[in-house]
Amino acid sequence: MAINLSLTSTLLRVANSAPSPLSPIVIRGGPKVVQPCSGKLRSGTLKSALRCRAIVGQAAEEIKEDDDVSLHDPPSASPKNEQVQERDYTGTPYVPIFVMLPLGLINMECELVDPDNLINQLRILKSSNVDGVMVDCWWGIVEAHNPQKYNWSGYRKLFQIVRDLDLKLQVVMSFHECGGNVGDDVHIPLPKWIMEIGSKNPDIFFTDREGRRNHECLTWGIDKQRVLEGRNALEVYFDYMRSFRVEFNEFFEDGFISEIEIGLGACGELRYPSYPANHGWEYPGIGEFQCYDKYLMESLVKAAEARGHLIWGRAPNNAGSYNSKPQDTRFFCDGGEYNSLYGRFFLKWYSGVLVDHADRVLAMANIAFEETPIAVKLSGIHWWYKTASHAAELTAGFYNPANRDGYATIASVLKKHEATLNFTCVELRTLDQHEDFPEALADPEGLVWQVLNAAWDADIPVASENALPCYDKEGYNKILDIAKPFGDLDGRHLSAFTYLRLTPQLMEEQNFMEFERFVKRLHGEFVENVQPNHEEETEEEVTVD
Picture 1: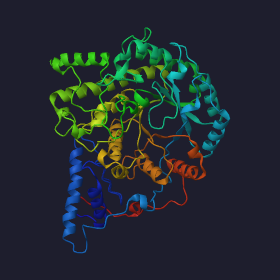
Picture 2: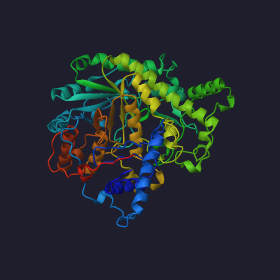
Picture 3: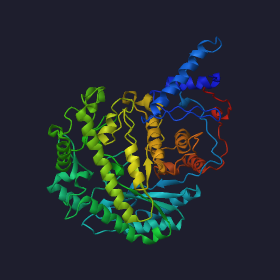
Picture 4: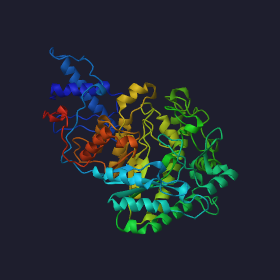
């Protein structure tokens, strides 16, 4: 076994700094690339991870025999304090970029707010060669007062402005409340007539163990229950989507609307509203299960009866509260009840409700939008990722403990409906999370690679967006590393990237200059003054016998 010592030093730093044995290992320095060791626990991946660690371990033993090489090099400075190294993306695949428009662009009367300022900002964006913009079409605005009475007037004016500037459009079917989440600066409730129904039948909303109702979106328990003025939730969603398709037919016909993202849960993402700030949740709390409305509880009881264990027809009573830590609960702690027969039954049912909801709504969306591509946003719940139970993911509906790949099932449903997976948090660095919130045991990078690999294994397009505002070179470089993985033998890359979001801060001169560079690099264009990444320039080869 021949291993170059300079490359071995890089391997050792990866091994010693990686907080998890399943963090991605990429050996960069020549044509040989070992990837992913990516956090996926499917067949063969754990063996690959251990093999990578074995390579590192054997390299360490060989170095010990060399008196001229020390295993205890001084720790490298945090990347925050180093000159940022950058890859040259000239000639790499073209990744389209869209920019999210402000949340308050359309008011509650469905009127376009300050169109002149918007036109000026869109012209500036156009000058940077972005491909298009993304906008939320809020259910609470369009169908605000009465069932099946839709007002699209403000959106028509907006779409015409965007088309006149020759920009493409991604549209989000936003069936959730706006307000209460990170970055929300306006409040757009669910339709008034929905809230009136909810005042008489609060079980149409997700409910926690204490009986608190969450008004952010409808419970998936009423997908097939006709409790919404004679319609069930699926019919309400379909009628809304079909109205949009008919109203804006000419924008579909000329290809101006390039994609429709389907809101499937809290914050427009496919997840339970398990960590609501308005119920007292604070990062990095594990959140709570949201299945205590009568419709989901009836479903749980039926599932328990079908298994022959009626006593299992209940949610866990030992899973802590919103701000608990996994180790402080009997359900999520190491060796906890989450991995018992009952725990596995409950989590399979709970996550199955999420998957079934996606399956039903996406089937309706493909009927409503015909040949237009559709997408689904998946949230990046990266805190407690380095524990065995992955508690925060479990309460959100992702059955992804350390011994199970919870994202492969979701990817297969998206494949069934030919939907793109849009994933968040690609700009977050695990090292930064360890410095800022060491108690969270977070690993956003490991989570990103697991989800991306699950999607790529299912052969579906993967897009992404940043979870938090990003204006600096370091954040953009992290996004680019995910958008175009270095040395990937299959040439995989993101199908598109959506930037969060158009703000006055983005329009500031220095921030916009950095953004323009980012756009060029996503497009694979030449950019001046790129600091070379010497790790990529070496042509040393790794030979593993």
